[in-house]
Amino acid sequence: MNKDWILQKKETRRSFANATWVPLRASRDEKQGTAKVTEIGYVSEVFACGTVAFPPEHREVAEKLGWSAIGIGHSAKPYAYEDGYYSAIDQYQLNDKEPIGVELVFEHHQPVVGGRLWILNPDLIVALGLIKEGNNWVRPEEDFVVVAREVLDSEGSHRLIEIKREFLIDYLAARNLALRLSYYQQRVENVAKLEGTEYASLASHEEQRDGGRFELLIRSLNDVYGGSWAMFRTWRTDVDEEEDAPVMGPEDNENTEYESSRGHRGGYPGVRVEGEFWRDEWIEHQGRSVRVRGDDEQNLPSFIVETDGARMPSRDLDSEDIGRWLWFRNSVVTELLGHRGFSIEWYTAETGGIYSTSGYKAHFGINASDLVTVYAYDVARLKAWEQHVWAAHNVVPEGKVSEELLSAQVRSKVAPTHAVEVLLFECMRMLEGGFRQKFNASLFTHDIDDAASMQVISRFASKDRASLLKLAKELIRVFSDRLNVGELRKLSTHTEKEKLGSNKLLQDILAQKVGVDEARKVFGVIVGAYDMRVGDAHPTGSKIADALKLAEIDENKSFLRQGEQLIEGFGYAIWTTGKLLFGEEKQSQ
Image 1: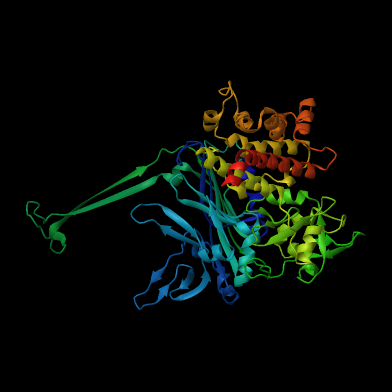
Image 2: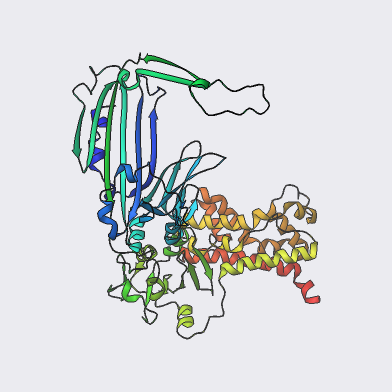
């Protein structure tokens, strides 16, 4: 360690009023090495903090409260008075029955089982809409951002609970409170002697610094841990230990005896260099509470609304009667789906809804220019952070509003079309049902969640050659990789069926019904997708070109449309397989 470390000058210049994270309660003692506190080489750093929130009417009293009143030595606990008055755990009392502040962290010593827990005030948790994940408190409505976090020691006892200041002041504003912190930081190093160290020029002193008090103590270890000691022992002499139920009488000089001893402890070589800093600090709110009280959000983007690039502020678009649409690059869908809690649902071939963690959905449509068009109000009513994601993909209007979206929102007429993504999974379900009915066997080894899989298998996933090949890989994963090879081998008549993979086995079963050539033709897209999957790691070369051709991909189209083609062709191959295998049986029934 060095002089700067022990004097803490950099650290004392920093305040939590400007920090990202604010401790609500802390008791951390970090040691370096294995030396004991009485030995040379011992190095430790302690940080302890206590907090209480106060309303304006008690500010004057709270200004006088410091380390002894609200530091780590105080803890929030309930108390029941004999006269019936009850002090709830969140009440901070300076005097009995006079609550003047609010506790944000409660201390709970675990009876019988042992240990100590700190509990974040449930009012703060519910007001900010937090859920706990591991040792973190996250806010799902804001992309599961970590709002508060806890640190526990190896024995499971809390050492720190801290909260992001941005969210803390939102809560404080809603309750019109200010948070008072009182904290202490100590740094200690035991050295053999001061000479030859960076501490040689230092002397014990105390000073007022950066709104707090700093004290440097330089003492010999012998002065700190050595010294005289005294012991006094007293005992009773009037108890008959042979009695079954002995009873002691009042204590007096006749039935007691005592002994005492004195001594001196020493032999602690070395010097203890100790720097300590105390400070009290306020965290003030800014009068605005967007999350808890629902105040207007000031940090909102603007959006392009005209073909000349003219923009309108989001707040001006936040009306159902705005009568405007916005245009976005289709990459916005992929980015949104990459956020936890977001999902897509298809309504027609070209329209659908993006569901977000804010509880809203954005009804979108794909236009002739492969742009995503959305009614402006559907975006303007979203949470600010979501709007900024949309704004990053906002473009000048091109290709008109999606025809199917306009039909639904203006003419109240839903297009009689279906998204290829939806049809794909419906075709798999139909083939699975027909297979079970005809062969009394399971086509797939395991089930999947169609809605969850549809978040990955989407035309929007195709942004370039590499992502198109990855989409093919996902198609094979949800279909070919799930095929029940054991059951398919039982039904196959191929001479080398033990060597065949899942696709070839199903193709052979179809060939028994329609012939080898027809079955090969039907499975062309599936085989092409399989070859594309193999090329995912090496997305160049003639083999990929052949695979794209086999999968009936038109490379002159945009990658969005190529992805759509791949999904459509794959689904159609599955549908055709089912129709050829089971169609006649259904017609005859």
